[in-house]
Amino acid sequence: MKINQDTVLQGQKVTLVPYTAAHVPRYHEWMQSEELQRLTASEPLSLEQEYEMQHSWREDTDSEHLKCSLREGGSECTFIVLDAARWPGQAEESCMVGDVNLFLTNTEDPTLGEVEIMIAEPSYRGRGFGKEATLMMMSYGVRSLGITKFEAKIGQENEASICMFKKLHFEEVAVNSIFQEVTLRLDISDQERRWLLEQTNHVEEKSYTELKQPAGVLET
Ligand SMILES: CC(C)(COP(=O)(O)OP(=O)(O)OC[C@H]1O[C@@H](n2cnc3c(N)ncnc32)[C@H](O)[C@@H]1OP(=O)(O)O)[C@@H](O)C(=O)NCCC(=O)NCCS
Image (cartoon, rainbow, N blue to C red; front, side, top):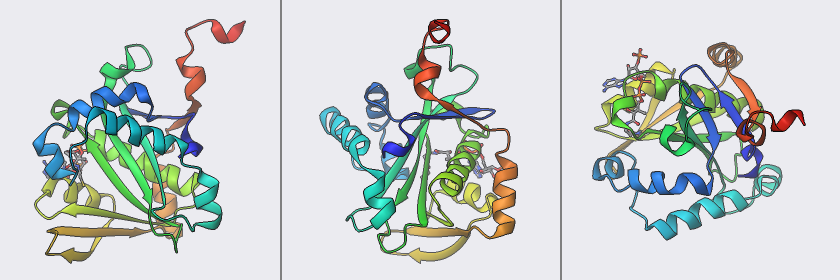
């Protein structure tokens, strides 16, 4: 999705940056983990396929989906989650801790976003990174993509994820016993919108290109 290709969202613990080819090797390494494949219901891809996915995501034109919403498969907005204490500053690839996605898959309803979050680095789990990244993505979805309801599809046994989404006001609306998956949902009423914006009022939106410039370059 091109809309967020220059967007950086800086929070307290996490910084969200657009998914670029430079992130692919580390991302691919994470997805070799059988635990992560199971928890995120993902199929392992080859490194080449991962580059293709990243490339096709980048080429996906927002206007096509957001304006006429007839494209099959919908759109996807992906950010890589970085440790805000380390980036900007240290090598970006070494600061990657996970990713967060918003899928606009319902071509009849472009205001419905499906959220997915992964804190891939085990040492970063249980420290509030997942919660902040999810809230930041939801707030971006509401403010910039016109999303008014969210869904999350989670494996029935994934207690951590189900607990997290319930803390973020999601409610269970369906259970798929074949896929052993629950669907949680949150409709953004005026009250929920106020709550979400309040939770994320510390977040700053910046330009990725500018943040990546070495110090001094912008002043010339
Ligand atoms: C699920 C996941 C995203 C949660 O992110 P996290 O950074 O570990 O969670 P946080 O520290 O932000 O915790 C947020 C809330 O989730 C709940 N939670 C987190 N880990 C939990 C656990 N192991 N058991 C129960 N609840 C848990 C807590 O209630 C916490 O609420 P609190 O803020 O009141 O303490 C993360 O653990 C993860 O990515 N795991 C592997 C991949 C995965 O399962 N992705 C989800 C696929 S749908």
